[in-house]
Image (cartoon, rainbow, N blue to C red; front, side, top):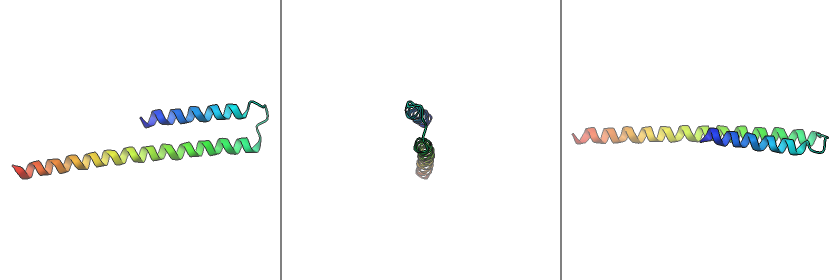
Amino acid sequence: MSDLKGKARDLAADVKEGARKIDGDESLGDKAANVGDRIGNAVKDVGDAVHKEADELSRDAAYEAGRKDEMMRR
């Protein structure tokens, strides 16, 4: 899912960059906004990856706890 989100963010940034170039003059402000969009997207992508990893670790820990509980019952 995070790959899809990342691609959607990149597409949105591409559209914004294209819109900023419509007037034919890409100002320093336009360039700064483009960089800001890309950096923001990179931070969000990292956040998605961390969230995904945390979810996986949580599921693994719950699975192992369940296995230990089951072993104690036997």
